[in-house]
Image 1 (cartoon, rainbow, N blue to C red):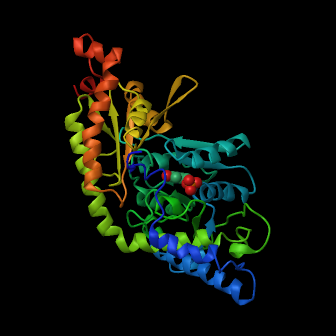
Image 2 (image 1 turned 180 degrees about the vertical axis):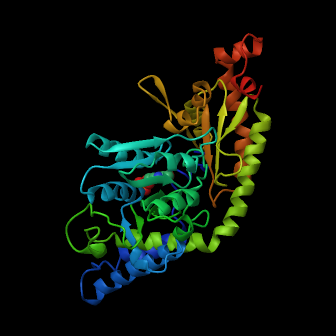
Image 3 (image 1 turned 90 degrees about the horizontal axis):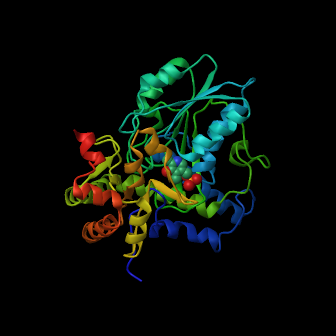
Length: 402
Ligand SMILES: *Cc1c(COP(=O)(O)O)cnc(C)c1O
């Protein structure tokens, strides 16, 4: 087996050694229940309290009680959306965007099936939502605006602070899916003017199955999991102590190393992007040219299928993802690539590299060396590429540029 080169950090990240260190005691000797009064329970309680402070600090939150722990990004997002809906006296309206993560989209779809109204605001060619369009979508019945901070497929960063200002002026709560930005760029709930914010440990070198929801004081939110009085009556169930301790350690590590990490990863990402765009004909970059996470590069490579590239790269030990998936013989294009209006031919050939702190220059060099060969082999068997080479078909990308 070849050495693994992992370039799919937007899907999940490896647990950092210092995070694992912080978790281990609570999987070993310190197994007490944080609700228990004796010393073993109180040690676990301390770990949960400490993690709450670490997460609060990362979000610029003074009072750690404004952080509630959950099982991850999806739970936090479900809770924010359904929890706001559940406290309303009558069914109302929600504003969101077309490019949200499926956790946000499907929470809204669920509410629609229960008689709610939802407006899915579109985005531009770069995946950016226009705050004016959010303002226009707000109705007298609107009870929540929910937008993501950065998109997981494209890396495009939304003008959330501008949206926050609009919501604040209208007195409508704003939920931000900050799963992709927390720990990568400074995220201050004050600056974003949001009332709820979701995050997940496993996207920032923490464990899977742990996350948090920031809840601004005064935000009326229904509990979704009922039982004991955990998390100040907001989310019942004995705490995932080891996972929470890991989330706290990951938050602290991310905050300490953010600047240095950005420099390293941005350099590698830019190098990869530049080299591939120059080496591969008929290739374009998707997402915003500048307002984009420094970790993410989404490209469309014409006349090849994303899945072919994934399999070819996997045989070389390289892990990436694609914006299309083949289900029952049909290529399905991601809702995000559809929303930016990417022609289907280009969406099918999309590939996403998402880099992390652990990547090295040698790894990037390997990808730059390996991918063109894979693309050429796939193009050799593509009738479309044959037509392009014969000059009987024009490239979608060159047409687009013209
Ligand atoms: C990964 C991700 C989620 C879901 O988080 P989980 O912890 O996997 O449930 C939600 N939103 C975005 C933007 C993500 O990248």
